[in-house]
Length: 211
Image: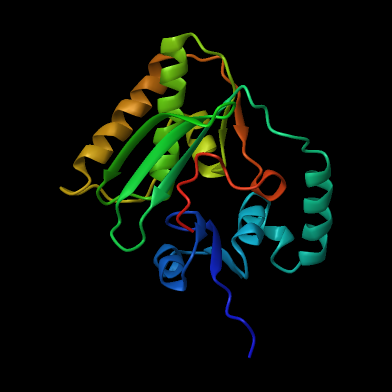
């Protein structure tokens, strides 16, 4: 019997990203018009796929493999004088948290949470803005790494484009989102925001290790 895929990539749905169960994936695509998603056997495959265009994986897998290998060859190594951020979402409780780590020493610079009723994309976004605000306060122009393409895009747009609904449980989390968006609107920064390439470099140093 073939091994059942464990990880699911949603490129277009209510929430996008890599999900570790069909139930979670289904929540993002069920009833969502023209949802784009695919299953993978390992998290590494899924993470790499999510970082690339979905068309390479839906009907063009051989082309995807060639492009991924070519990209990895030219990635080099990450900058150590930098910050890495990551978020975690507990699939059983819905609790979320995030943290930032100084790559040179692996010192945890900040850790926020757990907070109720959130999503991984939300805390990935908050982690990036927290790191930017900290760097501004410290006059620190180091690069900031995140493995979340979605969160990096939200920071670029200065808007958390989540479809997750506010509630009494996540009131604090949404207040934090509002403050983060206002910070982006009212501040400039010189820090370079970079994608952490898990396939080439291994797990993000700020990862919570709950895979």
